[in-house]
Amino acid sequence: MKIVLAFFVAALSIATTQAQDSPFPNSTWKIENSQDGTLVVLRKAKKLNLPEEQAKFHFIQFDNDRRFETGNDCYGMSGNYDEEAEQQITFKEGIAGMAGDCVEPKSLVGTYSYEVVGDKIELRLIANATDTNVEETYDSEDVVDAGDEAVEAVKQAAKEAEEAEARSKRKGKR
Image (cartoon, rainbow, N blue to C red):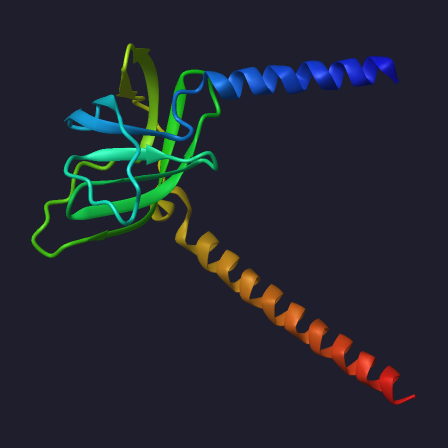
């Protein structure tokens, strides 16, 4: 029992230490440079009060729940990020919106290695980053089959819920 408890405490402290080492949670960064998306330079900035406050610069802001928001004064996108490997971060696209006359900034979607240099972070796109385009990742027949299976599962769950409701009504009449 003591060995299991000691192992649990050690694992928890390692996880906490690793989480504290990440520069991303609950932080805001100005995107200073994005050379074709292969090298992105971020500089620490003051937290923005989104959505009330409009950014006057291209930014990326992280919360503590693996979500981020990025944009500028006419474009905004929210998405998710993961830090599955040491010194690597993966940005996954989410919901975006922009004004009609806006030029969309270069997307950060992909996997990057990163290096912290003072109040800056340099993100370097990893050549074999995970493809986030579902149409290219999966065969279209597999996607249709998965969609059909999901529809059938929902229909089955609805049918079971109706049957359970009918049973409870019958029990109530007794």
